[in-house]
Amino acid sequence: MLYFKNEKEKKLYEGIMKKADADYDDDVKMMREWRGENGYHSQLVNQYVHSTNASLGYAYELMNCGREGDVERAVQILYKVVPLQDTNPDNDTYGIWSYFVEESLDEMAPPDWNWADFCGKRLIQIYVEFGDSLPCDLKQMIREAIIHACNSIIRRNMGPHYTNISIMGTLVTLAAGENLREAYLVKYAKERLKKLYEFNIGHGCYQEYNSPSYTWVVIDDIASMVCYIKDEECLKLFADLNDLAWRCIAEHYHFKTRQWAGPHARFYAMLEDDQLLMRVQRSLGYQINLVDLEKEGLASQLPLGFFSFDSVCPDQFKKYFVTPNSDADIDAVYVRSEEREKNEIAVCRQAEAYTLGSFYKSTFWNQRRNHLSYFGTQEQPVYCSMKCLHDGYDYSSGLIVTAQKGMRTVSVIGFGTNGGDTHCNLDMVKDATIQASDVRIRFEIGGAVDTVELEQTDDRTFLMRMEDALLRVQFPYARYGEEPVHFQITEENGHANETGGHKEVHDIKCIDVVLYSGEKKAHCFTDMAECCCAVSFEIVPNNGQFHAEAEAIVCDGRLRISQDGLAAEAPAAACRLEDFVQNARAYRDGREYQDIYL
Image 1 (cartoon, rainbow, N blue to C red):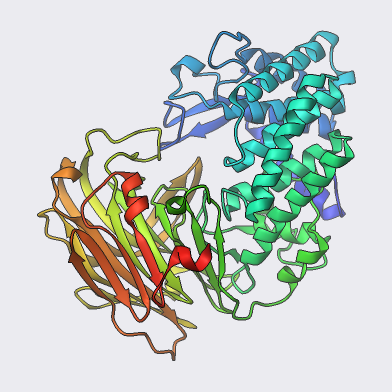
Image 2: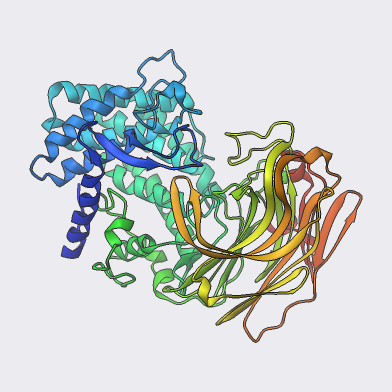
């Protein structure tokens, strides 16, 4: 189904379809895309590939669009892609598709079981809305593929901690059960929905906390799938889950910059583009105008399927998008409470001109924004994000604990010995050793960097000046084995951030703690007596006054940083991830974080 609120949206849709048409490969009968580096699951890099999920999405949109020849093209795609599913129940990969036709499930590293959910969703949409216009054999083929996908979802039985897949899989199995008249799927979906509802509503937020990439997936999936569901009780639960997602967006929407304040559990970008503004104004029925629908290039920022559902912002959250921010109270959320040491706490502070958000304990996985600020304006936004880099790419086994109060933080950064390299668990570091020519801690500043002035005032202190903000970063302690650590300002033109297939290219300015830079060699973290860094971070208005300088000390193998009522501490040597989680601590005004927020 297509939902247009005005004629300009129809023109945008035409632009979206024009781009999609250009990406279609008629020889292969699939969508073609460029596969870059640093992607997950697939071993294919730097080449054109043909995507199964994207092709199914395009097939659905072709049938939605209904131009001359569209249905015929969609049918050709479906005949090509549907049979690529593994239909053998004896296989671990039963019910899923590979990412690309160029790479089989056996060749992937590893296969992605989420493709049962993603591809299954596309097929349900096609089956329910357009099944009667398909050839009989193809309709039956799609029905069987949906059942296989649902069986895979049931076999995997993903819990509520994996937010988007938990909800998507529930929607897929419930919609399939109702529309294919398969009672066992309905029974499973209802039980799963009850569990994920109690988990997420009970915690007051989603496990993938404040995720710009995946909160929209939740909203989009609910909006696009509830039309296939009739059960009134289930619909009420999904409405509450939709409200929960909208509340997260509303409470983190920064009015001046039009950015989504951190911290982010998962985000593929550093800055929001016009897609966020388009989503907001559309969901508010154009009660506000944030981006011109005739703006050049807007269609290229909108995903295929953007107009195939109608997401409406609940009334109670509309005020957040129409009223400027004033200084807000700290927003603290914990999303894991099974064990005291494993609680995840997120703190966000917004002021009119800037934001600061941090996680209590976190990693430096490249989809995680564990320490993030926004400055500037809608037209010239600026971000400042803390990173730990291994040869220029985010190092997942970097660890951090942070204490935040208002617009300042103190943090201790360390290293794990049993984690991953570019991903938390897909490329595990062996023997606590990496091969590296460069290892550094970085505050990356991007966006409108020409509005930012950086100054190194002494060996370990840096100032960042903007029109309405002054920021100070200090590093009172840093060690990396026997290597000589140094501190510097770095500028890079045309820097590329690539996360989860999303690529941003822009100029950046950086505050760097260079732990090592030289010939590539082995770095064994267990051989280092200390590998850690202490940092303080503070934002004040241009005429504001900074707090006293932070102090740091190592005692009994623990690095502790403190500054005017804030403190953080963690092991000074590398350790197992679970030991860092158990032993790292943050304090505010003499109270431990967990005593404040639990």
